[in-house]
Length: 295
Image (cartoon, rainbow, N blue to C red):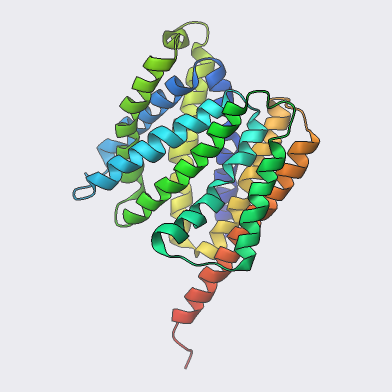
C-alpha cells in the first residue's frame, strides 16, 4: 500500500474506534433509543438521494432494517447507556464469532479447529468480563450481547444483497429502521426534546460524528481501499479498531482499567484475531488457487 492509503486506512480505523466514545457522550445528553432514531433518520436522508432504489430486494432490505438498523443499533446503544464504553468495545467483538456461527448455520460454511478455538476464546473473554463489579445491572450487558447476535443476523441479509451498493443498503435500511426505533423511544423513554435545551451541543456534535465521520466518511474510505487492494492487504487494519476504541474510552472518558477488562478483553481480542487471521489465510489460499499458472 502507498503511504497515502496506509494513512487513509489508519484514519478509518481511528474514526470507527472513537465512535463508541462519541455515542457514550451523545446518549448522556439524551436517551439511547432517541439517539439511534435520529442517527438512522439522518443517515438515510443523507444517503438515499444519491443511491438507486433496490428494486427486487425490498424483502431483505426491510428485514435488515428490523434486525440490524433497529434491533442491533438499538440494543447496543441501550447497553452502552449502562456499561463502560471500554466494556462495550469488547462485547462488540462478538459480532465476528456470531457471524461465522450463523454462516455455518445458514450457508453451510465450514471452519476448522483454529476458528473454533477463536470462537471459544471470544465467548470466554466476554463471560469473564461479566464478572466485573461495575456491571451492576446485567440487563445492559445482556442487551449488548444480544445486539451483536442481531448484527450477525443482519450480515446474513447483507450477504443476500451482494449486488446492491453498500450505500444503498445503509441508506434504505437506516431510513426504514428510523420509524421503528422512534416508536420504541416514544413508548419507553421521556425527555427527547431535552436535546434542544442544555444538551444541545453534546447531542448534535456527537450525532454529527456518528453519522458523518463514522458512518459515511469511514465506510466510503474503507470501501475505496477494498476496491484498490486485496482483502488480505486491507482487512488486518480492522484488528486495530478495538485497540483504538478501548484506549480512547480509558483516556477520554477516564474509565478505570480493571482486571476483568484486561483479562476478558485480552481473551476476546485474541479469539477474534485468530478468527480473522484464519479467514484471511483462507481467502489468500482461494485467491491463489484461481490464479492461472505463470508460463
